[in-house]
Amino acid sequence: MSERVPLSLVLFLIGALACGDKPEHAVPRDADTADDGGDDGGDDGGDDGGDDTGSGGLDCSAGDGVQFTAADGTASDWTASFAAGSDGAPALVEIADDGVLDVCGGPWFVTLDVTAAVLTIRGDGSLSESVLSGGGSGPIVSLRTAASSLTVQDLEMTDALACFGSAITAADMAEPCDREAGPLGAAIVLRRVYLHDNAYDVGGGVVGVTGGSVVLEDTLIADNLGHAVFAVGADVSCSGSSSIEAGMLRNSKSGVWLSSAGAESGYALTSDACDWGENGQEDVRLGGETYFNDFGDDATFVCDARSETCE
Image (cartoon, rainbow, N blue to C red; front, top):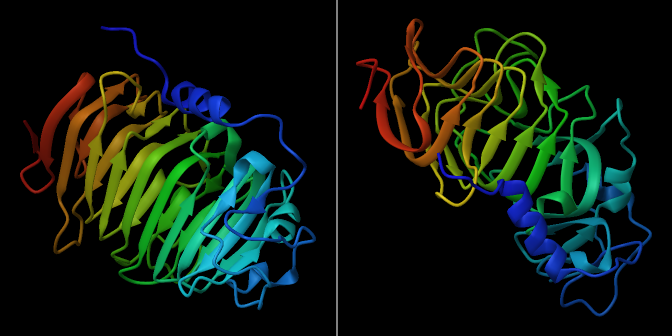
């Protein structure tokens, strides 16, 4: 086994080279001024009429902060809404509008309740500099809209606790922990994301989805309580690199549990140079009782839950 550099260290070093000492609060890119005082509109999904417009994101070298930029280019400072959360009591922030959420610094203790159809959540390219936490008492992202799209990149997600998907939940549930969750069909992309030390309180995974797809690009899901990805009727793909850790490692249950129970589509798991190992039960679980282990580092294979095979 060749020695590799952890993904978190790679992106930390990149960010450290790009950022010097930080002032107290981040400012919008391309904006002449910034409202450092925050506003109360963060919880209503960005329809707060903020003064900042067309920022294109946050300049994280300027310090910690959170900004939402709606699809029409209107930017709003959500720092105060996120700062209202604390360890053990995460802030509930509702996102109803399509747009981009830029996150600098942290940890920000938050649960994002998302009814938007298209949302991107992005950090500054250094995992240790952009951290979302569930505060040990809630999920981090809950998707509510059918066929929605979520992209998360350059972030660390940790200390979430939920019953289906601790860090990210995408399921049509009538109530929390609904065991009869219907398909939501969301398309989820995680790019250079580090998910660790998350847990479930009933059963499920760090990422829990019904229908749709989960795409992991240079993403590490490691050292969590539960399955790394719990997918019912959803396609899952993982792509990595031989130079970094990217994949499913050291989770207490499966790396990926791919279930086709009651699903009309979504049965495939694809691994392209991803790392697998030291998961508590198995690397891959297909259906109810088919297990695969010992894929190792930089593994490339395809699994089909219908035939319960990997090759």
